[in-house]
Amino acid sequence: MHSETEHRPVVLAIGGHDPGGGAGIQADIEAIGANGCHPATALTCLTVQDSCNVSQLMPLDAEHLTAQCEAVLEDCTVSAIKIGLLGSYQAADGVIRLLKACPRIPVILDPVLAAGGGSELASEQLLEKIRDQLLPLCTLITPNTQEAVRLSAGGSSISLDQHAQILLQLGCGSVLITGTHDESDRKWVINRLYQADKQTLIRQYPRLPGEYHGSGCTLAAALAARIGRGESLENATQTALDYSWSCLQQGYRTGRCQSIPNRWFESHSNNNR
Image (cartoon, rainbow, N blue to C red):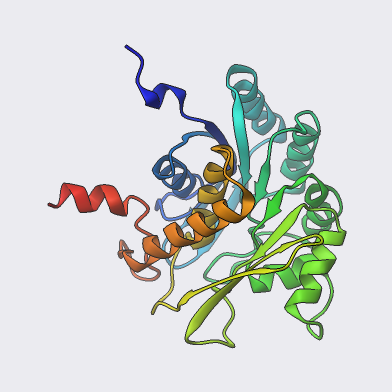
């Protein structure tokens, strides 16, 4: 007898390894699984990090990265691709070549440019590569406000709406700018979905106390799963935002610094009854 789980959509998550399990591929696996898809993964880099910051980044060979992806793509019907930390210019180049070979698969990019603790994770050369060659291949990108400013290269004097328009003009299909890092509003986290020729979709949530490790990974992975299941962009955005906020609301501490999103909160609630 075949169960429904045997027919789950496959989402390929491409990103870095977090030994503490708060962010990166581990976060992707949990969020994709919790949103009804099967997570396949390909590592771009290893890291030395904890709940406070990233202290070391060790990129994997680009050939090994693309070989991982090709093995999945040749064996499975992949419904969406989620990209997180690239880690190197060479990895970005390999991913770009890979995406050009499968243009029909939706691509969700979480442009990880810095760690939550402040460590830089993307050189200017890599940033230019993402801006010029990767963005045009993306269905949706999910920068926070700081990442949106860096990606657009529009400077600090223009509005968030203008940064979004620059990013759309660079070729990506849609832009979801999250408000988690916007310190101008201490009460609300305001998220804005920008699409060409459509009214901006705005969703806001009460700002939670403290800081979280892996919140951006969680949102982008949930979006990839929802889009991979065939949901419209607007519905996928609403569902993924609701899910991510609940993960943060029920987050927990594993170490000295940032909290971890509870990506299996529904399962944990059932187990504790």
